Amino acid sequence: MARILHVLTSPRAEGTPRLVLDWLTVASHEQGVVFLMEEPADLLDDFRKTNCWLHVKPGRLGRRLAKYPQVIGTVHRAVRRFRPDVVLAWPNGLAHLIHLGARTAGGARLLTHAGTAPGKTLYSRYLYNWLCFGVSRMCGHRVVACSEYVRQEFLSIPFLTRSHVVATHNCCRVGAFIPPPDAIRFPNRACMVGSLESSKDYPCLLKAWRLVEERGDFELVIAGGGSKMAEYKEQAVRLGLRKVTFLGVVRDIPSLLWTSRVFAFSARPEEGFGTVLIEALAAGCRVVASDVPGCREVLQAGKCGMLVVPGSPSSFADALIDALSRPAAPAEVAEARDYARGFSPEKMVSEYLRLSGHGRPAL
Image 1 (tube, rainbow, N blue to C red):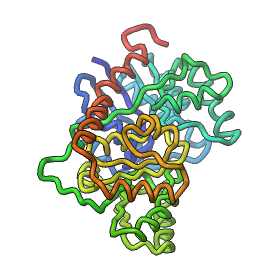
Image 2 (image 1 turned 180 degrees about the vertical axis):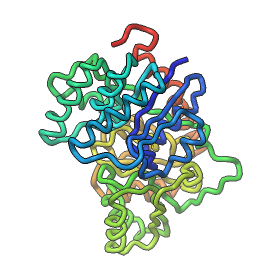
Image 3 (image 1 turned 90 degrees about the vertical axis):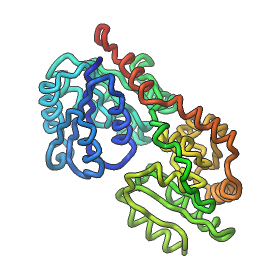
C-alpha cells in the first residue's frame, strides 16, 4: 500500500479534479488531497464523500510572485501532516512550487501530471518550462504526460531529457458510464462536455451547428462552466441557433451521455487527451472529434470515432449529420466499450507508482 498525496488548484468541475476522483476509487492505497484554493467549489462535496484525507486552503491564490510562498507553505504543511510516499502535482504550471514545498517537508517521491502540451510563445514554451523543470528536477521529480503527443511536445523543448518525461494515459471508470437497460437515448441529440475556455473550440462547433440546424431537427446540449460562457452564449444568439442549450456545470455526466446519440468534441491542437472521449465511448455514443493529435491518439486514428478537420465548421457539420442519422451498431458499441476498459483507474495508479520509484530508491 502506498500513501499518495494529490495537489490540485481547486475543486472546480473540470477534467483534472474528476480524474482524481477516479483515483480515489482505488481503495488499495491511502490517498489525500490538497486544494490550493477553495473556489470554485463545484466538486468539493464529492471529495468530502470519499472520506479521503483532505486539506482545502481558504481564499484564493495571490497573483504572480505572491502565490509562491502560499503554494510552497501549503504543500509543506500538508506533507508534514500526511506523510505521503508519493506527491502528485496535477497543475503542471505550479509543479516547481509544489515540489519545493514537498521536498522541504520530507522524502516523498515526486511526480507531475502534464495534461496539456506546452504553449507556443517564447515564455510559455521555453522560459517558463525551463524554470519549472529545472527546479523540479533538482527536487527529484518526473513528468508524466497524459499522452504520447504531449510527451513529444515537451521533448521538443531543448534540454528536457527522455528519461525525465514519460507518458501514461488518463483513466476512466467505465462501469459508471455504461447505461442501464431503461436509459432513453434521444436520436436527435448531440452533446459536448468540457470547460468553456479557449482550450476547446466552441466557436467552430457553434458555427457547425448552424449548418446542422439548416439540415434537420436536431438539438445540441453543452455541459460545462468557464470564463467564456457569456461569450459563447452571445455567439449562439448571433448565429440564430434555435436548439442549443448551455447547461453550465453538470454533476451527472453519465446521464447526459446516455440521452445523447452523438458526443461532439471540438478541440484545439493543445488538447492533451480528452478523457471524456473514453467516457462517451463507454456510454455508447457515436463520437465526432477534431482531428488534433490528442484526440487522434485516443480514438486510434479514427477507429473509435469520426475525426474531422480542425476549425472547419463544414467538415464538423457533415460528420455530425452523418453520426446523428444512424445509430451505432451493437457490435461497434461493444468494441468501443472493450477498448475503454483498458483505461482503468487501477492501471493508471499502478503505472504512476511504478514511474515514481515507490518501493525502490528515489529518482
